[in-house]
Structure formats: structure tokens, C-alpha cells
Length: 541
Image 1 (cartoon, helix red, strand yellow):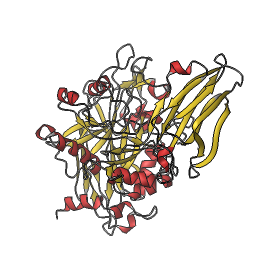
Image 2 (image 1 turned 90 degrees about the vertical axis):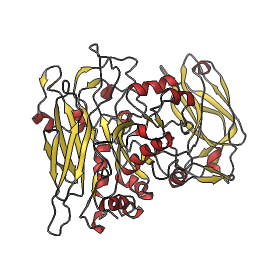
Image 3 (image 1 turned 45 degrees about the horizontal axis):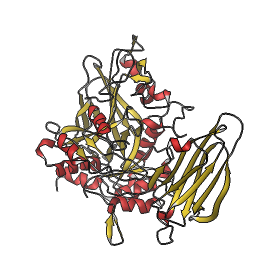
């Protein structure tokens, strides 16, 4: 077996992924650097812009918006229900023969973990969702029947448990609404769905309310009585997630399961795809068991536009502890344990935000559709992709416009030798972003910064021949001469900035409009002017 193929095989072995949290790398020889780009033919392979966590895509208009942004691999990940938006309509694919689709969905609501995960390439569908319209919510009482529900049974209890969400808003005082539910009892979600009895004339003050219900009938009749002059109902919905331990749902997503004699879930292509751990606001110890569960658990999100960009540990839209770098720092913390962990870059719900994965794939025009799908999912599995957090195109009037965050900045070489790592970058806009900086990041932090589109990083070894660096990642930035409408933006200044601060460099502030797509001004107001790309880690094995 050739060395390159051997390293690819080693990277996929479950034993390597399941090493303990401490001393994970010490049980390997440490003499080779596993390069996820080893099989990439840099001269002929092409870049395929893809999404691993992106809602929308259920209408032609929505899909066309993503085509305008340069996406050609559409793997939408909707929920309520968490069902793949796949296959895309035949007439749409006929109009857009270069589009590649893949199944995906966002799974959530586990009794043993506060986690959302996406299942790239998986056919698994979970959950249910039904919302009461705003028109109905404006009239008291709201009498609504939720239908076509599963009845709770002890054989598959997760199918008969639902979540009723009610959001009440009051302009002043503390008025209350009264809720009655027929056809279900309240239950303890994290207590084995224990029966807590019926809900009759339950008083609900202003705020968000979540009640878990176990059904006694195939439909639930709800009645909410309130004073329309004192209270507004801004959300009224019945939802359902996976309702099972995360390990069970991981298995169903990856390998499928038999239900009533029929196969459900599983990966469409056995050699491609896998699971991503979304907006990881928790600690390393929360995610280590998940990454160790199976080598097809691919990694974590390093950038999520919805969750403070490079990440807050305090939840969505919390900027109290800026700079927000929790996901970014967690990535390196995981890599320091010796684990393989790919980094994903996503917009999530922010359609016109930033964050995408750029897959490196063989020439797609030469492949039939099924093989194109497989090639894209295999790139995810092998780590043959990089993350992009790009500038945003804008008009002189500070309106974000097409092609939004599309960028041609790319890695054109990531090649390992015994004594060095060679990297080249191409595709920066010579007029708007003529300057390029490359950074090499290891387990010791930023190890080298080179102000050029070409760079080498020495692979130093200790006296025993073991590589000193436990891992190496590469970051590259293409940036203009100035920012803030004329203030110099020098290489020296950029060297002193972290990636969060670089991501906020701007010349103008965005106007709220059709492409603003966020209630959070901290990330969406500055119109970014720097293109940023992030390689997958090269790991010592």
C-alpha cells in the first residue's frame, strides 16, 4: 500500500478517533503528518461551494438565491420536521444541470444532551412541526387542534412526545393567559417522559413557555384564553424533535435502522458524508464522547453566523465577552487531544450572512449526477475542503447585494514533504483585496505569519524523529490597503489582530433591508471587506 493511501486509511480508523482525552497523540508514532488534501489533484480539481448547515431551499426562489451566491452543492438542513430537502424537484434540476443535491437535516431534542447536529448525506427524518397562524393568534380564545400525531406508547415512547411552545408579550403589568390541553398530558422530558397529569386552566404569565406533552389521542385540542388588550401571542406551535438519546440518533443517521420491517435513515453513500456538531457553545468534555463515537462524526462548526460568528459560549447573540472566539478556540483544544476534527463554516439561518464550505472535487462535468453527489460527500468525509468567511458585496448606499459572500479566494496548493509544508493561495481580487497573509497555526498557537500568497512551514522533529507540531492548520486573508474609509490597513496591523477582529474590518455599515437578514446588529451591521479561508487540520499520526 502506498504511503499516501495508508495515511488516508489510518485517518479513518475508529481507534484513532476513540483515544482518551489525555495523551491521545502519545500512543502513535508521531512521524507522519496526515494531510486530508493528499489525494487532491491541485491542477485539475475544482472548487465546489457547499453548505453543511443552511435552512431554506424549499422553493425555487429560495434555491435561486443560493445559486446567485455561487452555491452548487445544496444540502439544506431544515427541521420541524427534521427531514431531508431531497431530492430536489426534477424540473428544477433539469433547469440547473450543474446543481448537486444531497440529503441533510438538523436533528435536536435529545434527553441526554443539549445538542443540534446535522447529518450530511443521511436519509434520516425525525420530528414534527405545526404552527398556529398570526391571524389565529390575534383572536381570543385561540382554539386549535393539532392533528396526525403519534399516540404515546412504551415501545417507542419518543414518537408520542411533543413540545408546545407559547410566547406571550405584554406592554405593561403581569397579565396571564389560561391554557387547557385535551388529548395529552404534560410529561417530564428528562425524566423518562413521566406523566405529570392534564393541563387544565394553566396560568401563563408573559414570556416564553415550553410544555412537553405525551399524547393520549391522535390529535390534541388546545384552548388559550387571554385579554387581547393586555397580551399578544407571538408564538403558538407544536413541535417535535428526536426525543431519543443522542447515541441512538447518531446510529440511525449513520447506519439506519429497521422500523416495522422497513429501513429508515442511514447514509446515502457509505463512503461519504457524516455528522457535524452545530454551534458548539459547550465544553470540550461535552463533545469528546461524540467525536469518539464514530469516525463519521466529522467535526464541529468553527464559524456560525447565527451564533456570534467564531462563537460565544454564552448562547446566541451574546456579545458581553467579546471577542467571540469560543468555537475557534474549542477547535484547537480538540485538536490538541490528538483527535481528528474537521471545521465547518456556516450561515445557519442567516441567508445573507457569511460562512460556507468549499469542497475540492474532481472535474464534475465528467461525472454522472450520482457520482457527483458521492464526490461531494466524500470530500466532506476526507476533509478535502476549506472554510470561507468572505467579504460582503455592497452598493455605495450600504446595501448588501449579489453575489453576497461569494469569493474566489482559495488554497491552490497544500502539500507536505518530510521537512516542510508548502502552501499557495490564489483567487484574491487584485483591485479590492491585493494583499495576502498566510498564517500557520499549531498546538502552540500561531507559529508563523507570512505576508505572501506562497509560504512554507518547516516540519521540525525532536531527537527521536517525532514531529514537534501535533497539528498544523493554515489560514489565509486577502485584504485591501485601507479600512474605515481611508485608514491604512497594513500587514503589521493585521498581524496583531485575531480572526474575530479581522472578520469585522469594514468601510461602511449596512442598511436594514431585504438582505440584512438578522436582528443582531453586532455581526450584520459592519459590511466586511476581508476574505478569510481556513484549511482543515493536518494531524500528526
